[in-house]
Image 1 (cartoon, one colour):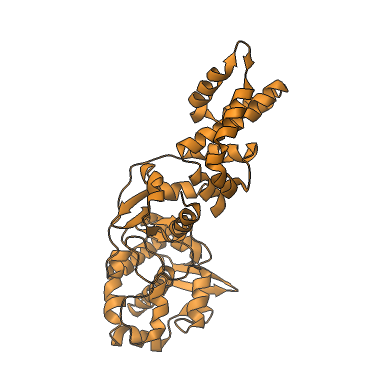
Image 2: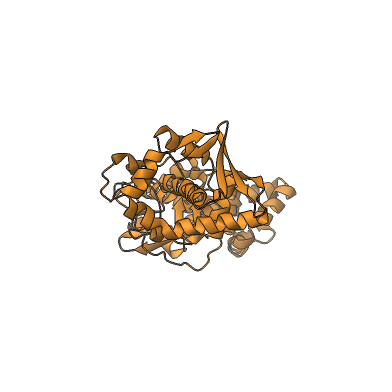
Length: 361
């Protein structure tokens, strides 16, 4: 297996949710972590649920590489050598801890122990010899994961996480389509990292940053269409302006130092602070069944800063607003079709969500 090539594809999947399918990804397809669509490998709901168990990318990748069953056997036997030495040293607590952490491997462990037991004694020498014999087969993987020989505590960490993996039925995603409403359909998988570089081509089914595939007379708006969260935040501001034009300001985005607070007008015509923009968007994502990866969304205030720096938003009386010249572009140019007409359903859902929150207030 080409581990460097595999690692490159795992990185793409981790950040963008899709990559070109290669044979090295087949074991993860079999486990329900990925599915294949055309020539692409795509992350599943199982992948998204599993990745959230890890605090960093490397631990997740290393655990994935431990899913290989032959490598699992090698790691189990390597860790069992340490446990048997604990037994010889009468470290009962260490043995109990090992057994407690390996419930799903209990059958394999018992089988290995039965093969080693002779009377009251376990012949660890034969196990140690076996581990040494097969070690060359996994030398590259060991170096990649452990930066050398596998060691007990780290083996237990990876095997414990493998046991936590739960494989659910995999549902394949609908193609993104050209309209914003198609791309932001309920249940869509969406990359949550704001810092990703745009892909050259539009992804197949996962919403992630990419170079716009529409002709724009005003190149400034390329910034809106490049990143999904730039677009979403901007459309939230469009909804704010539209509701005011209809006679009532139902929502305001209040600039507070470097943060953004969401201020709602309750159904009783009283203003109240709902929470931060992160609270507002994350809850909307949950009601829309958006599958965010690799982590929950955060720091959306940086998108407001970004749009403000590029002139899409201005601050009036400590509130983010869309400048009049930008509104003119939205409604009086060819931009209306891809942006405004193409996002009608999404904007309606945002309005409905605002109305639900206002009723709570």
